[in-house]
Amino acid sequence: MEKSVYLDNNATTKVDKEVVESMMKYLKDDYGNPSSLYTLGQNARSAVEDSRKRVASILNCEPRDVFFTGSGTESDNIAVKGVARRYKNKGNHIITSAIEHHAVLKSVEHLAKEGFTYDIAKVGEDGIVDVDHLKSLIKPETILISVMYANNETGAIQPIEEIGKIAKEREIYFHTDAVQGAGKLTLDVKKLNVDMLSLSGHKFHAPKGIGILYKRTGINPIPLFHGGHHELSVRPSTENVPYIVAVAKALEIAYRDIDEHRAKQTMLKERLKAGITKNIGNILLNTPDNSVFNTLNISFVGIEGESILFSLDEFGIAVSTGSACTSGSLEASHVIMAMGRDHTTSHGSVRFSLSKYTTEEEIDYTIDKVKSVVEKIRKISPYK
Amino acid sequence: MYSQTVMDHFRNPHNVGKMENPSGVGKVGNPQCGDEMIIYIKVENNVITDVSFETFGCVAAIASSSMTTDLIKGKTIEEALALSNKEVADKLGGLPPLKMHCSVLAEDGIKMAIEDYRKREEEKKNEQKI
Ligand SMILES: Cc1ncc(COP(=O)(O)O)c(C=O)c1O
Ligand SMILES: [Zn+2]
Image (tube, rainbow over all chains, first blue to last red; front, side):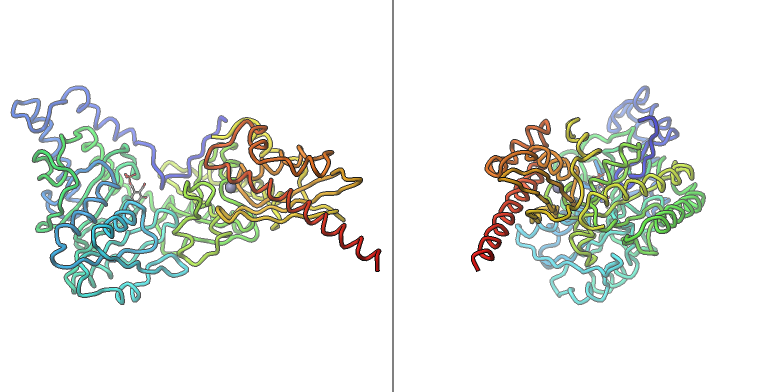
């Protein structure tokens, strides 16, 4: 398998060389603990605080509102559980959406065991949250709304600004899981009307195991861990200096070059979409027009996603699927199902997610292989 | 994740396709994951002389369909009925635990096809009586 075409960038991304270089110094030389008072420690401290400033400038917020965490999952958990638990005297009701990542959905489900109640806002066939439905779910006891910015499976962009405005009017805390929006959409928290926002480094060419949480000053989530005074005790634990430097650098690069990335990946995604649509019959698009520029999700009717995944892997092409056979729980993707697709369609969904490293040649190669793979598997299927 | 044998059967599945004038047809769906399979058998003198399948499912489902059809070809009805999904999985060099349920599909398919064959035979007999 000499050829390698990585089209699973919503799962994780390759760490950028510039990012690797930026963090090496903090592994090799300035390895001090940022809480230590001697020079070695203070060098690390300045690296952390400098990184915080850089992130804040992209989020258009105060550096003190930026928190470094261990992952996107952790940021989501701190925001959802932390805020619900802190403000439960104000109310016990939470609203989220049907297409959230499990980091949010399972957190909300867990809170239900602690006496909270919740409602799930529906999405339309396009995979976009139905704002009117969400509005109708608001009760006097509602304290928190959590709706993601862009969906990881379909790329559908959610009406965050609008929901944020509604939440503000009703004095409800609003969190967005913006993990799939980083490097693709604006992260200006004022424009987005959000109180809290989660990011994960490994989705934008930083390493795995580093997350960011923005929270507006004045909101005080109860921390998941108790320990030292790091990150204002919102997330105690000695700062992961190299990864903090890396995540700030990666975010900076992502927004420095965003116009170029958008232009190139939009073109490549359209090329992939046109190539598949023209060459393969009986498909269903699961990605709406209003979507992030790197994501294309398609159902190949009559065949199952895992068999497509493994067949493409033989050609060195990496994609993912919403098939029940790969989910562990044996349930087809809750996201594709929430869009009203039947089980069979969800079972055959394939996600292609591009990055700045994707080339035109890779896309043409992929179109060609998808065509032959789908033809081959359809021959085996009772549905032609 | 999958054994070499599973991948070989998945890449080049044996006995694929619809059969003209089968003696029995089994159509099964896996309520757990949504995989589906149709299995066709031709029976002469209580022996399965030909078998084929069509499967909508994952690598494990397709590979077990292929292996199962290989294993029952040339076998008597009773021998075919005795085949278990565990045996199919063993012959495939094992399946990941989460994928065992996918191999049940083929076992159920065979049983259903034989049941259908017996029903048809019964009907033929009844017709002759009339
Ligand atoms: C939308 C979304 N939220 C949260 C996460 C979790 O991030 P992490 O892997 O950093 O925990 C992911 C990715 O896995 C994601 O796609
Ligand atoms: Zn399966």
